[in-house]
Image (cartoon, rainbow, N blue to C red):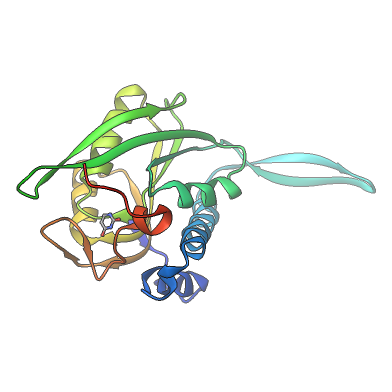
Length: 216
Ligand code: URA
C-alpha cells in the first residue's frame, strides 16, 4: 500500500516544491529543515493508524481521561540522506527507539552499482512497529536490502517507509518484495535515469543536505 501525502492540498506541497527547486536548494539548512518537516507530518499521519490506550492524568484541577499511543515505534534510517527526515520523525515520536543503517551505492567503473550495507545499529525489532525513512525511494534496492537484513534480526509487526519522493518502479519493487509494507511519500515521480536518479526528482538528497561527497 502507498499513500501520497501531496494528494490532498497541505503545507507538504510547499515543502516539496522547495526541496525540488534549484534556487531553494542553495540553502542547505532550509533543504534539511524541509525534509525534517515532511518527516514530522508523516509521523503525525502514521500516528493516526496506531493503537491508543487510555490514561488517567491528574491536572492541577482534577482528573482527565487522555489517550496515548500504545507502542513506541522503532525509527530506522539509511545514512546519510535519511538523517533530516529521521530527525523529523523523532521530533514527533520522541520516545521511539532508533536504528541506523549505512547502505550506499558502491559504483563500478562501468557506471553500474550495487548496494553495500556496512554499519547497522538496531534495537529489538520483534513485534515492533518499524518506520524506515529514506528521502529518495528510487530503485528500491537499498530499502529492500535493508528490510531483509532487519527482518532477519527480528520480525516487526508493521513496516512503514517514509520517502519525500518515491519512484513508481521503486514502489513496485518494494511492495513486490514485501507486500505488507506501507509507503508514505511526499510525491511520486515516474522516471528513473540509468544511474538510478529520480526524474524530475530533486538531485542527490545527501549532497544537498550535507555537501558533495567524493565517489568511491
Ligand atoms: N538518491 C538520491 O539522492 N536522489 C535520487 O534521485 C535517487 C537516489
